[in-house]
Length: 331
Image (cartoon, rainbow, N blue to C red; front, side, top):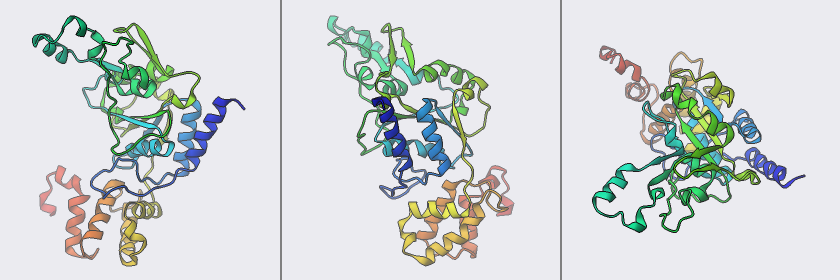
Protein backbone atom coordinates (compact mmCIF):
# COMPACT_ATOMS: atom_id res chain seq x y z
CA UNK A 1 0.00 0.00 0.00
CA UNK A 2 1.44 3.36 -0.97
CA UNK A 3 1.87 6.20 1.54
CA UNK A 4 -0.69 8.22 -0.43
CA UNK A 5 -3.37 5.51 -0.29
CA UNK A 6 -2.63 4.91 3.39
CA UNK A 7 -3.14 8.62 4.06
CA UNK A 8 -6.47 8.58 2.24
CA UNK A 9 -7.61 5.51 4.13
CA UNK A 10 -6.84 7.28 7.37
CA UNK A 11 -9.04 10.22 6.38
CA UNK A 12 -11.87 7.93 5.32
CA UNK A 13 -11.69 6.18 8.67
CA UNK A 14 -11.94 9.54 10.45
CA UNK A 15 -15.08 10.29 8.44
CA UNK A 16 -16.60 6.95 9.45
CA UNK A 17 -15.84 7.75 13.09
CA UNK A 18 -17.14 11.33 13.07
CA UNK A 19 -18.91 11.78 16.41
CA UNK A 20 -21.78 14.16 16.93
CA UNK A 21 -19.97 16.14 19.63
CA UNK A 22 -21.36 18.64 22.08
CA UNK A 23 -21.85 22.41 21.75
CA UNK A 24 -18.80 24.34 22.93
CA UNK A 25 -20.97 27.21 24.11
CA UNK A 26 -24.58 28.19 24.53
CA UNK A 27 -26.48 28.06 21.27
CA UNK A 28 -27.46 31.47 19.96
CA UNK A 29 -28.80 31.75 16.43
CA UNK A 30 -27.33 29.63 13.64
CA UNK A 31 -24.29 28.08 15.29
CA UNK A 32 -21.58 27.29 12.76
CA UNK A 33 -18.58 26.54 14.93
CA UNK A 34 -18.60 22.86 14.01
CA UNK A 35 -18.76 21.62 17.59
CA UNK A 36 -22.03 19.75 17.12
CA UNK A 37 -23.62 17.98 14.17
CA UNK A 38 -25.61 14.80 13.61
CA UNK A 39 -24.14 13.26 10.42
CA UNK A 40 -26.33 10.78 8.57
CA UNK A 41 -24.93 7.72 6.76
CA UNK A 42 -25.60 9.54 3.48
CA UNK A 43 -23.52 12.52 4.60
CA UNK A 44 -20.64 10.31 5.71
CA UNK A 45 -20.63 8.52 2.35
CA UNK A 46 -20.80 11.80 0.40
CA UNK A 47 -17.81 13.22 2.30
CA UNK A 48 -15.84 10.03 1.65
CA UNK A 49 -16.63 10.13 -2.07
CA UNK A 50 -15.56 13.79 -2.24
CA UNK A 51 -12.26 12.94 -0.54
CA UNK A 52 -11.63 9.97 -2.84
CA UNK A 53 -12.44 11.77 -6.09
CA UNK A 54 -11.10 15.21 -5.18
CA UNK A 55 -14.41 16.71 -6.33
CA UNK A 56 -16.25 19.51 -4.52
CA UNK A 57 -19.23 18.33 -2.44
CA UNK A 58 -22.31 20.30 -3.49
CA UNK A 59 -25.05 20.30 -0.84
CA UNK A 60 -28.52 21.41 -1.86
CA UNK A 61 -31.55 22.03 0.29
CA UNK A 62 -33.67 24.70 1.97
CA UNK A 63 -32.10 27.33 4.26
CA UNK A 64 -31.53 26.20 7.83
CA UNK A 65 -31.27 22.46 7.11
CA UNK A 66 -27.63 22.19 8.23
CA UNK A 67 -25.71 22.50 4.96
CA UNK A 68 -23.29 25.22 6.00
CA UNK A 69 -22.56 23.90 9.49
CA UNK A 70 -21.40 20.56 8.06
CA UNK A 71 -18.19 22.09 6.70
CA UNK A 72 -16.80 23.31 10.02
CA UNK A 73 -17.85 20.03 11.67
CA UNK A 74 -15.92 18.00 9.09
CA UNK A 75 -12.90 20.30 9.49
CA UNK A 76 -12.86 19.66 13.24
CA UNK A 77 -13.38 15.93 12.76
CA UNK A 78 -10.45 15.65 10.34
CA UNK A 79 -8.22 18.11 12.19
CA UNK A 80 -8.08 20.32 9.07
CA UNK A 81 -7.87 24.09 8.76
CA UNK A 82 -11.17 25.77 7.95
CA UNK A 83 -11.89 28.59 5.52
CA UNK A 84 -15.14 29.96 4.19
CA UNK A 85 -16.47 32.32 1.55
CA UNK A 86 -20.08 33.53 1.70
CA UNK A 87 -21.37 34.34 -1.78
CA UNK A 88 -23.50 37.45 -2.42
CA UNK A 89 -25.18 38.71 -5.58
CA UNK A 90 -22.16 40.90 -6.39
CA UNK A 91 -19.45 38.34 -5.57
CA UNK A 92 -16.65 37.79 -8.06
CA UNK A 93 -15.01 34.36 -8.37
CA UNK A 94 -11.67 36.19 -8.40
CA UNK A 95 -12.19 36.99 -4.68
CA UNK A 96 -11.80 33.28 -3.87
CA UNK A 97 -8.36 33.26 -5.47
CA UNK A 98 -6.70 36.59 -4.71
CA UNK A 99 -7.23 40.31 -4.90
CA UNK A 100 -5.02 43.39 -5.01
CA UNK A 101 -5.53 45.91 -2.22
CA UNK A 102 -5.26 48.96 -4.47
CA UNK A 103 -6.77 51.27 -1.87
CA UNK A 104 -4.12 50.48 0.74
CA UNK A 105 -1.39 50.85 -1.86
CA UNK A 106 -2.79 54.23 -2.91
CA UNK A 107 -3.00 55.37 0.71
CA UNK A 108 0.59 54.30 1.32
CA UNK A 109 1.68 56.20 -1.78
CA UNK A 110 -0.13 59.35 -0.67
CA UNK A 111 1.42 59.10 2.79
CA UNK A 112 4.86 58.66 1.22
CA UNK A 113 5.22 55.21 2.72
CA UNK A 114 6.38 53.66 -0.53
CA UNK A 115 10.15 53.90 -0.14
CA UNK A 116 12.52 52.12 -2.47
CA UNK A 117 12.48 49.09 -0.16
CA UNK A 118 8.70 49.01 0.21
CA UNK A 119 7.58 49.17 -3.39
CA UNK A 120 7.19 45.40 -3.60
CA UNK A 121 3.87 44.91 -5.34
CA UNK A 122 3.19 41.61 -3.62
CA UNK A 123 2.77 43.45 -0.32
CA UNK A 124 -0.65 44.41 -1.63
CA UNK A 125 -1.56 40.97 -2.96
CA UNK A 126 -4.20 39.43 -0.67
CA UNK A 127 -4.57 35.63 -0.99
CA UNK A 128 -8.17 34.39 -1.09
CA UNK A 129 -9.60 31.42 0.81
CA UNK A 130 -8.95 28.97 -2.04
CA UNK A 131 -5.29 29.99 -2.11
CA UNK A 132 -5.04 29.49 1.67
CA UNK A 133 -6.74 26.10 1.30
CA UNK A 134 -4.47 24.91 -1.50
CA UNK A 135 -1.11 26.18 -0.31
CA UNK A 136 -0.95 28.08 2.98
CA UNK A 137 2.84 28.42 2.80
CA UNK A 138 2.83 30.43 -0.44
CA UNK A 139 -0.27 32.33 0.73
CA UNK A 140 1.63 33.42 3.84
CA UNK A 141 4.45 34.68 1.58
CA UNK A 142 1.93 36.20 -0.88
CA UNK A 143 3.59 34.05 -3.53
CA UNK A 144 6.93 35.80 -3.19
CA UNK A 145 10.34 34.79 -1.83
CA UNK A 146 11.43 38.39 -1.38
CA UNK A 147 12.48 39.43 2.12
CA UNK A 148 10.72 42.76 1.45
CA UNK A 149 7.30 41.07 1.30
CA UNK A 150 5.21 41.38 4.43
CA UNK A 151 3.75 38.03 5.58
CA UNK A 152 0.00 37.60 5.16
CA UNK A 153 -2.21 36.35 7.98
CA UNK A 154 -4.75 33.57 7.34
CA UNK A 155 -8.39 34.40 8.08
CA UNK A 156 -9.70 32.98 11.35
CA UNK A 157 -13.13 31.48 10.67
CA UNK A 158 -13.23 29.18 13.71
CA UNK A 159 -12.49 30.68 17.09
CA UNK A 160 -10.42 28.77 19.63
CA UNK A 161 -9.62 26.00 17.16
CA UNK A 162 -6.17 24.79 16.13
CA UNK A 163 -5.90 22.26 13.27
CA UNK A 164 -3.96 19.11 14.10
CA UNK A 165 -2.83 18.11 10.59
CA UNK A 166 -2.17 19.48 7.14
CA UNK A 167 -5.18 19.93 4.90
CA UNK A 168 -8.17 22.22 4.75
CA UNK A 169 -11.93 22.36 4.37
CA UNK A 170 -13.21 25.26 2.28
CA UNK A 171 -16.87 26.26 2.47
CA UNK A 172 -18.34 28.20 -0.48
CA UNK A 173 -21.68 29.15 0.98
CA UNK A 174 -24.91 29.92 -0.94
CA UNK A 175 -23.35 29.82 -4.38
CA UNK A 176 -26.79 30.25 -5.97
CA UNK A 177 -26.80 33.89 -4.81
CA UNK A 178 -24.42 34.78 -7.66
CA UNK A 179 -25.04 34.51 -11.39
CA UNK A 180 -23.63 31.81 -13.66
CA UNK A 181 -20.43 33.76 -14.35
CA UNK A 182 -19.34 33.17 -10.73
CA UNK A 183 -19.61 29.38 -11.15
CA UNK A 184 -18.01 29.46 -14.59
CA UNK A 185 -15.05 31.38 -13.17
CA UNK A 186 -14.41 28.52 -10.75
CA UNK A 187 -14.58 25.63 -13.22
CA UNK A 188 -10.82 25.42 -13.79
CA UNK A 189 -9.56 26.35 -10.27
CA UNK A 190 -11.88 23.85 -8.56
CA UNK A 191 -11.44 21.17 -11.20
CA UNK A 192 -7.65 21.29 -11.43
CA UNK A 193 -6.94 22.51 -7.88
CA UNK A 194 -4.61 25.15 -9.31
CA UNK A 195 -4.73 28.67 -10.73
CA UNK A 196 -2.34 31.16 -12.29
CA UNK A 197 -1.53 34.50 -10.65
CA UNK A 198 -0.20 36.88 -13.31
CA UNK A 199 0.94 39.46 -10.74
CA UNK A 200 3.64 37.04 -9.55
CA UNK A 201 3.86 35.01 -12.78
CA UNK A 202 3.38 31.77 -10.89
CA UNK A 203 0.94 28.92 -10.41
CA UNK A 204 -0.75 28.25 -7.07
CA UNK A 205 -1.32 24.55 -6.43
CA UNK A 206 -1.20 22.06 -3.58
CA UNK A 207 1.64 19.58 -3.19
CA UNK A 208 0.89 16.66 -5.51
CA UNK A 209 2.72 14.21 -3.24
CA UNK A 210 0.78 15.17 -0.11
CA UNK A 211 -2.82 14.05 -0.41
CA UNK A 212 -3.84 15.50 2.95
CA UNK A 213 -3.03 18.99 1.69
CA UNK A 214 -5.61 18.75 -1.08
CA UNK A 215 -8.61 20.64 0.33
CA UNK A 216 -12.09 19.27 0.77
CA UNK A 217 -14.37 21.85 -0.84
CA UNK A 218 -17.98 21.99 0.34
CA UNK A 219 -20.43 24.15 -1.60
CA UNK A 220 -24.01 24.93 -0.60
CA UNK A 221 -27.03 26.04 -2.60
CA UNK A 222 -30.56 26.91 -1.53
CA UNK A 223 -31.78 26.11 -5.07
CA UNK A 224 -32.87 29.71 -5.60
CA UNK A 225 -31.12 29.74 -8.98
CA UNK A 226 -30.09 26.94 -11.35
CA UNK A 227 -26.38 26.28 -11.48
CA UNK A 228 -24.55 25.75 -14.80
CA UNK A 229 -24.58 22.13 -15.92
CA UNK A 230 -20.82 22.16 -16.44
CA UNK A 231 -20.36 23.23 -12.81
CA UNK A 232 -22.73 20.63 -11.37
CA UNK A 233 -21.05 17.91 -13.43
CA UNK A 234 -17.77 18.59 -11.65
CA UNK A 235 -19.29 18.10 -8.19
CA UNK A 236 -20.43 15.29 -5.93
CA UNK A 237 -24.06 16.28 -5.27
CA UNK A 238 -26.05 15.50 -2.13
CA UNK A 239 -29.54 16.88 -1.42
CA UNK A 240 -30.06 17.51 2.30
CA UNK A 241 -33.58 16.32 3.01
CA UNK A 242 -35.78 17.54 5.83
CA UNK A 243 -35.35 15.36 8.94
CA UNK A 244 -38.12 13.19 10.33
CA UNK A 245 -39.33 13.45 13.93
CA UNK A 246 -36.81 10.96 15.32
CA UNK A 247 -33.86 12.76 13.77
CA UNK A 248 -35.21 16.12 14.99
CA UNK A 249 -35.28 14.74 18.53
CA UNK A 250 -31.71 13.48 18.11
CA UNK A 251 -30.58 16.91 16.88
CA UNK A 252 -32.31 18.60 19.81
CA UNK A 253 -30.59 16.29 22.31
CA UNK A 254 -27.20 17.06 20.79
CA UNK A 255 -27.70 20.81 21.02
CA UNK A 256 -29.33 20.77 24.44
CA UNK A 257 -27.83 18.09 26.75
CA UNK A 258 -30.39 18.97 29.48
CA UNK A 259 -32.98 17.02 27.47
CA UNK A 260 -31.25 13.74 28.32
CA UNK A 261 -32.00 14.17 32.02
CA UNK A 262 -35.28 16.10 31.97
CA UNK A 263 -38.09 13.77 30.88
CA UNK A 264 -40.76 16.50 30.96
CA UNK A 265 -38.82 18.72 28.58
CA UNK A 266 -38.00 15.80 26.31
CA UNK A 267 -41.69 14.91 26.24
CA UNK A 268 -42.43 18.45 25.02
CA UNK A 269 -39.80 18.17 22.30
CA UNK A 270 -41.28 14.81 21.24
CA UNK A 271 -44.66 16.48 20.80
CA UNK A 272 -43.14 19.38 18.89
CA UNK A 273 -40.94 17.40 16.47
CA UNK A 274 -43.69 15.81 14.30
CA UNK A 275 -44.96 19.29 13.42
CA UNK A 276 -41.68 19.95 11.58
CA UNK A 277 -41.49 16.81 9.46
CA UNK A 278 -41.32 17.29 5.71
CA UNK A 279 -44.81 15.85 5.19
CA UNK A 280 -46.37 17.73 8.11
CA UNK A 281 -49.31 20.03 7.48
CA UNK A 282 -48.19 22.47 10.18
CA UNK A 283 -44.56 23.57 9.80
CA UNK A 284 -43.23 21.61 6.82
CA UNK A 285 -41.82 24.85 5.41
CA UNK A 286 -39.83 25.61 8.57
CA UNK A 287 -36.14 24.86 8.99
CA UNK A 288 -34.28 22.75 11.51
CA UNK A 289 -32.75 25.96 12.84
CA UNK A 290 -36.22 27.35 13.62
CA UNK A 291 -37.16 24.08 15.31
CA UNK A 292 -34.09 24.44 17.54
CA UNK A 293 -35.12 28.02 18.33
CA UNK A 294 -38.46 26.74 19.58
CA UNK A 295 -36.77 24.02 21.62
CA UNK A 296 -34.56 26.65 23.26
CA UNK A 297 -37.62 28.74 24.14
CA UNK A 298 -39.39 25.63 25.46
CA UNK A 299 -36.42 24.87 27.73
CA UNK A 300 -36.12 28.45 28.98
CA UNK A 301 -39.79 29.39 29.46
CA UNK A 302 -42.36 27.42 31.43
CA UNK A 303 -45.01 27.38 28.71
CA UNK A 304 -47.50 24.65 27.82
CA UNK A 305 -47.46 23.61 24.16
CA UNK A 306 -51.24 23.91 23.90
CA UNK A 307 -51.43 27.36 25.50
CA UNK A 308 -52.28 30.64 23.78
CA UNK A 309 -48.83 31.97 24.67
CA UNK A 310 -47.14 29.05 22.89
CA UNK A 311 -49.25 29.65 19.78
CA UNK A 312 -47.90 33.21 19.75
CA UNK A 313 -44.34 31.93 20.20
CA UNK A 314 -44.70 29.62 17.19
CA UNK A 315 -45.97 32.52 15.09
CA UNK A 316 -43.03 34.67 16.17
CA UNK A 317 -40.44 31.99 15.39
CA UNK A 318 -41.93 29.99 12.51
CA UNK A 319 -44.82 31.63 10.67
CA UNK A 320 -42.76 34.38 9.07
CA UNK A 321 -44.49 34.01 5.72
CA UNK A 322 -47.54 35.60 7.34
CA UNK A 323 -45.49 38.70 8.07
CA UNK A 324 -44.12 38.78 4.53
CA UNK A 325 -47.65 38.67 3.16
CA UNK A 326 -48.67 41.47 5.55
CA UNK A 327 -51.49 39.27 6.82
CA UNK A 328 -51.55 40.89 10.20
CA UNK A 329 -55.28 40.25 10.51
CA UNK A 330 -54.55 36.55 11.14
CA UNK A 331 -52.82 37.51 14.38
